[in-house]
Amino acid sequence: MLNFEGKVALVTGGGRGLGRSHAELLASRGAAVLVSDMDAEAADEAAAAIVAAGGRAASYRGDVTADAEGIVKAAVDAFGKLDIVVNNAGIDQHTDFDENAMAQTRRHMEVNFLGTVAVTAAAWPHLVASGAGRVVSTASPTLSGWEGESPYVASKGALFAWTRTVSIEALKKGIRVNAIAPTAYTRLAEAADIPDSLKEHLKENMTTAMVSPVVAYLASDECAVAGETILAQGGLIQRFSLAMNDGYTNPQLTPEDVQANLSVIVDDATAKPLGIIGTESETSLLDLFED
Image (spheres, rainbow, N blue to C red):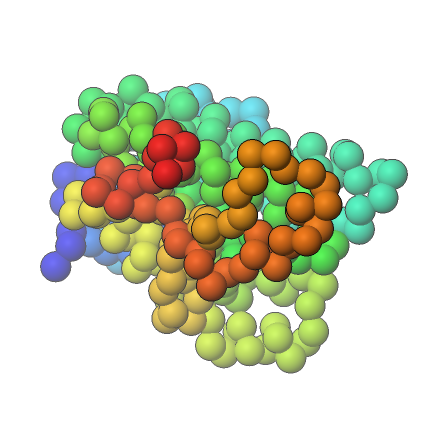
C-alpha cells in the first residue's frame, strides 16, 4: 500500500474540486498537507475537514501568479519541509478567438502555466533537499483541440511541453515531474459551454475521486515515470504522448513535393510515440537527427 508517512505536500487550488480531493487522499495516506487556495474560506474548510478526519493539514490564501514564494513558505513554516507539489490551481474561460483574444490568452498563461512554473521554482530547493521530490501538474485532455478554448488549451499545452522538458533536469536531482490530464465534474465543468447532457454524464460517471489516485501514484516514492502526462477520466487511465511517423524525405524538397506526398507526411500508420524520460525508450532531438 502506497503511503506518505513523513511526507509534506502542497496542493494549490486545494479548497474545492480536484484539488481538495487530491489533498484529502494524500492526507488519508499519511501526508501533512498545505491547502492553498485563492478562496481563504474554502482552503480553511478543506484543511479543517482533513484534521477532523484525523489527518494533518494547514491552509493558506495563495495566488499562484503573485505569491508563489509565500505559498511554499507557508508549507515549510507549517510542517518543516516540502516533498510534494501538486499544481492544481487554474482557470478556464471560454474565449472565441478574435482581435480581443490577447488579454485572455495572457491571463490563462499567467495562471495555468506561469503560476505552475512559479510555485515549482519556489519549491525547487526544498524538493532537491527532500531527495525524492515530486511535482504533479494539471494539463488537460483538450490538448487535442477544443473550439473556443484557445487560451486555455495553449496554457495547458505549454505545461505539457514544460513537464516533459524540465523532468530531464529534475531526474538528475532526484525529482520526478509529471502531469495529469483530468476529466471530472467540477465547478469549471459546471460553468463550461458544453451540453447539459455531458455535464450530467460527468456528474454521474467522472468524479474527482476517480482522478486523485493517479496524482497519489505520481507523487509517491514508487513513481517510476518522469515527464509523462497521464489522462484520467472516469477510471480510464491513458498516456498522452507525442508521436512521429516515418514521413517523407527529399533533400531537394520543393513545395510541389510536399503537395504530392502529403498523404505520406501525415500518415499515422507508421507513427511511433516518443519514449519515456529516463528509460531506455527515451527519445531526444539528437536521436531523431541520427535516425
